[in-house]
Amino acid sequence: MIGRFLAVMAGIAGLVAGSQAPAFTLQYMQNLTGRIDELKPIVEQFDADVGRYGYTRDAAIAECATAQGLLEALCNGYATTVRRYELLTSHYAELSAASDYTRPLVLLKGASESDIIREITRSVMKEYKPAIPTTLDGAAYAGGGFAVLWGGLSFIFGLLGSIFGVGRRYA
Image (cartoon, rainbow, N blue to C red; front, side, top):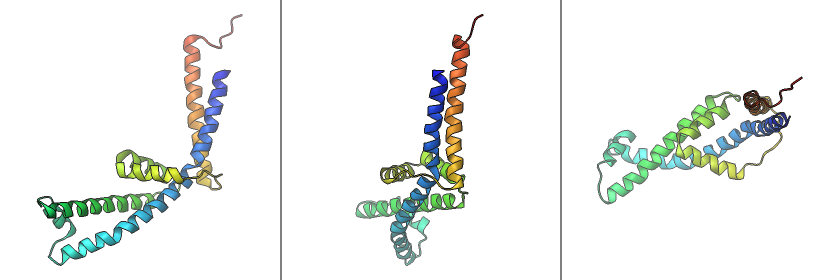
């Protein structure tokens, strides 16, 4: 009895948490767009500067790896900025190409693979305000969150009950 109650409560918590995934992902994408827009002119200027000397972006970054002294310090800063820009634009393209239903999963995958994406996710989470979802994808994630937590705990409590004989009635 208690196990069922806990499973339903966990299911409701999963419903509420899951329903926020699509809206959170959209807010994340807005934040990501701002970060990309901030880096874009720096990278474009870098490309133009190295292009005047006949270098491509990749060739200049490769040569930066061998730089020393002041040039090394400048190169490392630009190389880091370029790598971050490339990662974020690639991640944004992946999110944009995903459907409304898979986009939160793409974000979750990205956050599990990259410290930069985890950093952005934490930043968005600080400012995110939950709201009632009014979209089909929000409802789908709400149902999925309920099903996963309720179903998972129901299974675990059922398994434990069968192992320890809880809930058996003897005649």
